[in-house]
Length: 203
Image (spheres, rainbow, N blue to C red):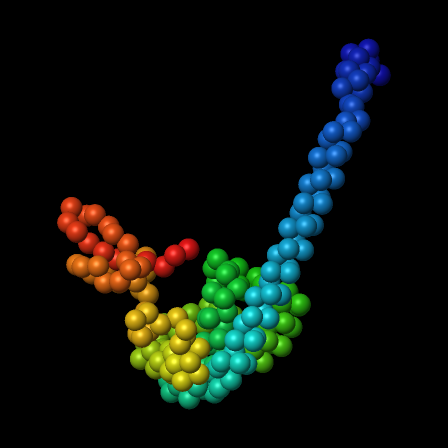
């Protein structure tokens, strides 16, 4: 062993130091934080699932039967249309960023088990869902939405949210209504270079 090698080895030995107490504390806190975030996400996920289940059972008990009534343009398939449409909705309900992310979730045994327990369906691959949904005529989905809205109206679920005895339909808007005159005492005055009044929801 040469003297140069000994010197280099001794130099590196001196450089190695044990992690400081502050470093260990930061690492420990980081692990605790990740664990807490994971637990919170799991709890939030369970809460969302519980809400979805309650909404379907209480307000739309026949939802899946309505889906099955849609005319299927396929000759044969491993999944019926109710399973396909439900999977496409689930991707948004569970706030997955992409089809690939949802497919990755489907490989999780617990997620797949909870999905099947919640909806009563198998989980199709989202590429399969995409290929079918892009060929499904929009009129069928529009009819499904109308039936759901009619169900809500018949049950008077939206009755207390009416405005001037009318049901409100918001389409990417911030206001409820606008007038050229003061419609009521709750109207807010907005000046756009001319006199105007509008009614806005209070947050």
